[in-house]
Length: 211
Image (tube, rainbow, N blue to C red; front, side, top):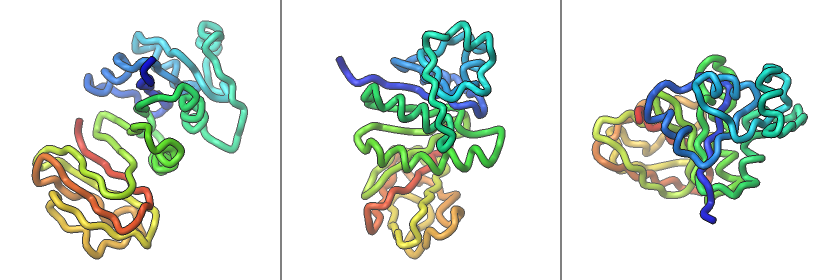
């Protein structure tokens, strides 16, 4: 059996774009973070698994899908991380994370920052965080990304010792010190691909605007 593609739905802003909703419809499995199951059911879809401490899951959803609940009471991690760790048990080839942004800004920042940690846990799994506005991916080492001419690109890192050069972006990254989040944001792709070459193996995040 081939490794599955799994979509995790968090309890942030539910997607509306057809291209993003397609990830829910075409995945082999949909894992919901606790109360995100309510939004999924309201959209006419059903969860394959609901993960979390169930403290915010409505009773009628909990009763209807009681056979699909995975209760993880750990209060040291958020429901997205709980869902991610359960998802890894299925040895997925790819994980799409939806609903991780929007609504509360603190949740958005926390969830985005977790993406690099998730990729470290399974470097062979293709993991991205997708919204109606764009897509985050985590990477390390030299990477080439497909793009569209004029597409908005931002790079974020959490290691001030990391330096990077870029080919295929409008603004050079030489000399950028990644000591604050804005330093390599709001760049622009000049062609159908761009290549990032860092000086080390630290993970960094790439945001590709649009779908």
